[in-house]
Image (tube, rainbow, N blue to C red; front, side, top):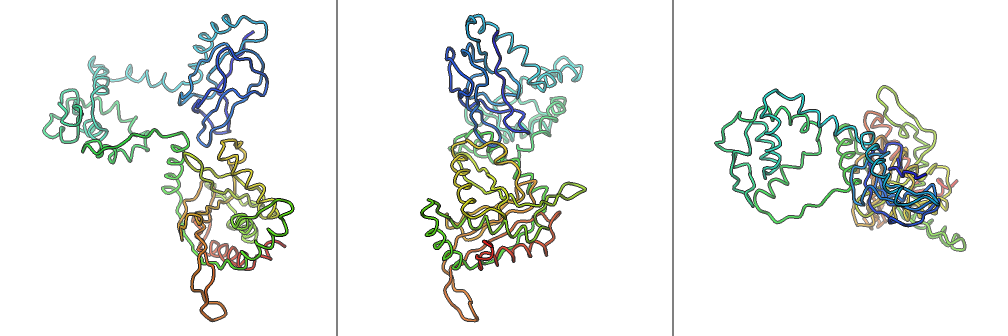
Length: 433
């Protein structure tokens, strides 16, 4: 009997994904553990393995398809000895049965015109407007004023209706349409940048439309929510690095036989983990009417990957040895760039660290990664005039800025964490004890 392959839930919060690429084709024989496809979630692109063996009888969802709901049937597998053509023929039925379950939202959306105003012309008007070439700005203004776009002539490129074409147009013609469209506009907070895009199109500025990946959409949504909902407080300290750099050199010499090479970032992860254990008031999470206080420090480390950013987690960084942190970070970063991380390896964490020093950035203020309550932003280490033992000398100094969720962390506690972090780096032997 043929078996269906459904869109998998690759993380606890995944509701839909993009079927980025098929790694098999119809007629291929697959065994348990073979790679079937690459699935793009809101966090990463992950490989999807076969559970059963058989022959790929039919592929129901083409690669590149976006918004595929979890549970949607994406392929049919014929068992050994089963007629492939018969199994493939059953794919249409399987797909039809899965569609309503996988995507109940469009069914509701289609029902909306039925409940719309009784006038026979109302449902037809939005359909007509939808086909009219108009800039997003012009379309929104027309909806707000109740102007029928179909009654206008466009002066923009290729007859596109632009903002200026609405001047003098008769208002109120399509008022019911504005009511019907209002819920769509209200449910699309990401439309805020549209006026910029509209301006580029309206004025004929050469541009290219770049399609957003699922990861980029999630980054935009989460960081917007963070800045809108989380009251950030920023605290900056300058930290002398010379002792840390000297210790790193000595440790690397001792670890060479084990083929371990510590980076400065590895030591910073360790320092932040220890500092959070010393100042537990900052190792917290705001949760509405309560606070979560963590008993270990899991550090999410920002890693740049093609198309976005991901934060693999070094668990229990305060208790791990620096060699273990280095090995873990190297493995996590390599697999992050290859899209091989499991959800448990990048979801969670109690605090984050973002290092842009390798790009020569002197100082920056990072956006908190919800639901975490703090992130440490690391700038470049550089030679600076620095007062040491009451005399002006040259030292290697970096600036570190902590961003704190002020709902959960008071300024004084944030300052204590920054002080502890600074002292651990300037006297690094202490964090290895």
